[in-house]
Amino acid sequence: MNTRKGRTRAQESTSAIERMYITMRHLFNRGFYKPGGVSGESLRQSLLQIRPEIYGTVAEEKTELNGLTYVLDRLPEGIEQCRYINLTSDEGYKESHFQVIIPPKRRRNCYRIDKDQMNIEITRGRSDIYDILTHLTFLFIESHKICKRVLLPEKGELIRDWEKLESAVKKGKLNQFEREVALVHTANILGRTFEEVLEVYRLLATKEKPEKFLHIIYWLGKIAIEEETLGVKRTITFSPVLRERLGHHIHGEMWANTIKNTLKKYNLLNRPLHIISANMHSVMNSIFAQKVLGKEFQHKEELEIYQALSLPENDQLRKKVKDFASKNGMISMDDVSGTNIDVQIFDTAKIKSNDGIFKPKDTTPDEEKPVLFVMDYAFGEQAYETIDELLKPYKSEDGSSVFLNVVSISIMGKAGILEGEKGDLMIPTAHIFEGTADNYPFDNELSKSDFEGCGLKVFEGSMVTVLGTSLQNKDLLRFFNESTWNVIGLEMEGAHYQKAIQSASKIRKSISQDVKVRYAYYASDNPLETGSTLASGGLGTTGVKPTYLITQKILEQIFNI
Image (spheres, rainbow, N blue to C red):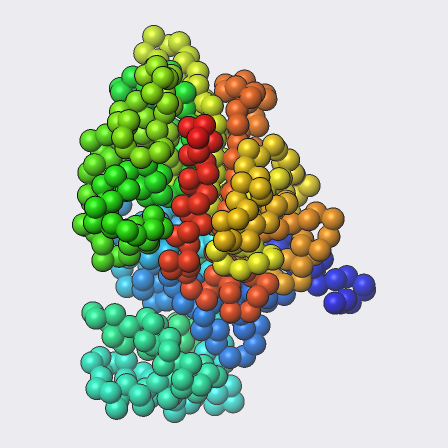
């Protein structure tokens, strides 16, 4: 599809994404901006030009409901009521009386300072800031849509639908009749059907806050109306401490030093180390679950055990496996550095010979048996910060350096797929960093042939490391997929991991040049397929099979099975 002056939509989208990130960096350095001002308008126009798939109908007059629920899951509860949003570093708020608010789908600490201000802690680098500002820009667009629909420009009066919604919100507890009346008026305000509004109402309702959806729409509209009629502008600020600390690896260094001290404490510092970026259950369950739960799941497939362990109601089963693992060589480390990356260390010398297939050979001396270091998922640029610090030598008390014996680094993650469906697999041969000429080819120890015949589609090729998951549209993705780049998917960390690995192994020489790398991703969404974007919901149990399949292939190579 060509646009003005022969530029394609993909080219215009690329330019708009670059403008957004340049603008966001400028605003961060400046220290503040008003979303309703010139800078905020620049962000809004860029986002509307991109029209990301994840934000659906953001460029249309009607309110985008799927995108709204996606964004609300990633921002602190109550943010729609706040005129002042302050992005801060870890500045000691946990020592205060303020109650921490953690969004359901993003691990970041937030604090409601008063009725008008929300503070959001940034401890995971620039990617976190980009993510938040992009979501906030979407919220501002949607709030002004509501304002335009309810505020009559000629008289400055509000339409009847708004008055009815306001009345329902102020009443508080509603019976079914009153609720449905309020939803009818809300549907008219949003330009949506009653059925669509009812579906989102049910999705957002909680036992404590059954009318949560109505309150969110009311506050989004109220703040925008007051901004329009009273000139009370919303403001986003970046604290001086955040601006000073960002980019200095403060949290990553604390995280890495804690880990190396723990390896030293348990006499594991010189053992062969295999780093695995994954979740906090698949490695543990692959090694121990069959042993612990085999009797309870007699005559069941192994996959059924993993599916049962993934269900929210099975806390007791998960506890049994974790307790057993802790007695047989697993060290759990909850994060205290602010990175929000928890860690598990497995001393495989303590795995008994009858504890399943994933164990070292009996003939291997204990001092040569591998140590598995499993780290939870990093977020964007945080992947570079954490791995870069982890691969540096350990500084002993006498000042000497102890180099880690890193044998392999394996990255398992979720990614958007450009061919195929949710749950399918992607095996990258290179990472391309979006918006730059940076590219990172590598020899992947995992290959397409490792996964063939497992019941899932497998794709092999390049992957794009995007600046943010929220800014891709179909035109841009089709260009990646159909051009000579041969891109099969997009994710947020690959190029950052590989940059750290290459600098440590080939330039700094802090780890072996022969370190083995493994990358494999499973599809959490297909952004080219309507109804299959991230905003359409999670994977559910669909993600269990690919998660464990990738984990077990990694473990097979580590243990030479």
